[in-house]
Every structure is written in C-alpha cells, then in structure tokens.
Length: 150
Image 1 (spheres, rainbow, N blue to C red):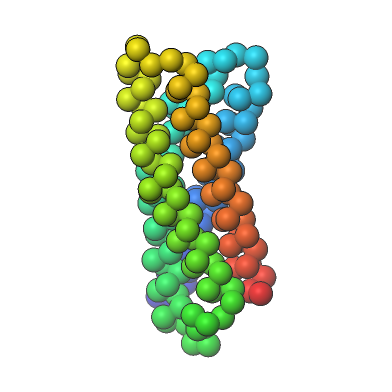
Image 2 (tube, rainbow, N blue to C red):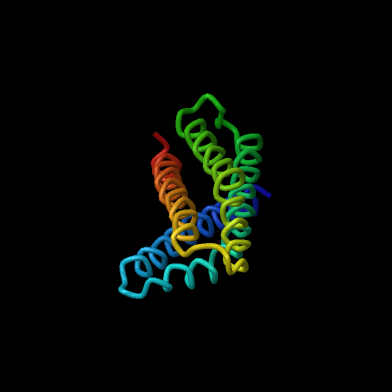
C-alpha cells in the first residue's frame, strides 16, 4: 500500500510542478514575442484547463503526502522537510484557489465581452502569470526539501 500512495504522491507532484514549469515557459515565450495577441491566445488555451489540473494535482499531492506521514514509521510532522513541504504546498494551493482561479475566470469573462480593453485583459493575465511565478518558486523549494529531506 505504501508504494501506491508514494506513487500517487510523486505523480501528483510531477504533474503540479512539471505542468507549472511548462505553462510558465509557454507564457514567457508568448509574452516576449512581437505578437501582442499571443499571450491572450496561449492563456486562453492553457488557463482554464491547467487551473483545474493544478488545483487537483496540488490537493492530491498534499493528501497523499499527509497519508504517507501517517503510515510511515519514523516520519513525523515535526521533521523540517515534512513541515516545510506541507506548508509551502498548502500556501500554493491557497494562492491557486483563491487568487489565480478567480482571476482566470475573470479573464475568460472579459475575453467574451467586446467592451473590455486589451489593456485591462492583459493586466489581469499578468496577475495570474505572476501567481504562476510564485507557484513555481514555492513548489521548487518544497521539492528540494522533499528530495533532500533537510
């Protein structure tokens, strides 16, 4: 049973961090190009799908991680690497659920409203992108703590 829980924990973390890095790369490339509509196009393609995927992967990683601590002899919540991992993962899920997700939904509505200016849409997209930067940074630190068990 331990190996299956560990498998799903690692799989969730891979999807969460790997997907976040991939989306960051797509959005960075679109934002640096000369086509001003590229960022909106990429965001529209990956925003809603990845928002839901990252929320599910994040919650799954936390749940399976907690489960691993409960069933693994010698692992305690007082261990720094476990505490930091849970704390950073939880902060990241909160940022995604309560900051990035509502803004992604707002962008979707703004894109369907012809009265919205491109500047207003870009401003909200940049807020979501910045939340993605924070997500990747926090997840990377959590990943390092989990791998090296500081």
